[in-house]
Image (cartoon, rainbow, N blue to C red; front, side, top):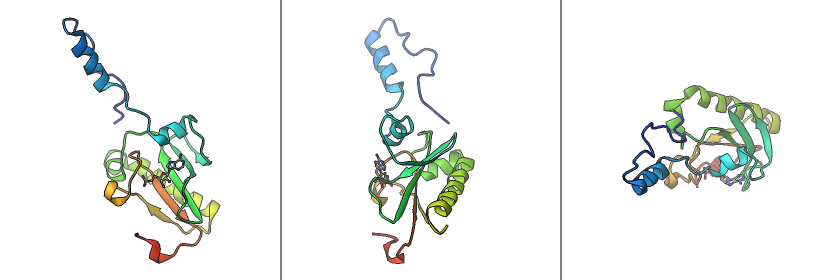
Length: 144
Ligand code: AMP
């Protein structure tokens, strides 16, 4: 489901209209890397706590719980958990399994898993990620 890069065979061959060909190329080119992709590529630093072939986990820079980790697929093909569940449910299951392992390693094993989905729900990074919240949570903080 990755749709990065230029894939079409006739892109850029509009020799009669080079400007049009160029703008088609630009509109189909690789999307900007998300802030999480820039962490994955080590372009920007993060406190990384786990990494696999498909996932990375690091501490949230603005923690909302004693333990606040983000579990992020390395692909940025899915902008939210609904897309991920439809496109690659196995990868979603791996995110949940890694969240469980991290909660055992960094806290008691109990944890809350949050997928903000849409800006009105607080999503600010449109590269799917799970918030792993642990370390003693107050039930009253579930929404706010
Ligand atoms: P959301 O608001 O659900 O999209 O979550 C995005 C999360 O990413 C927020 O909790 C931010 O604090 C966190 N975040 C943004 N930039 C960074 C960063 N460079 N390192 C770690 N966490 C970050």
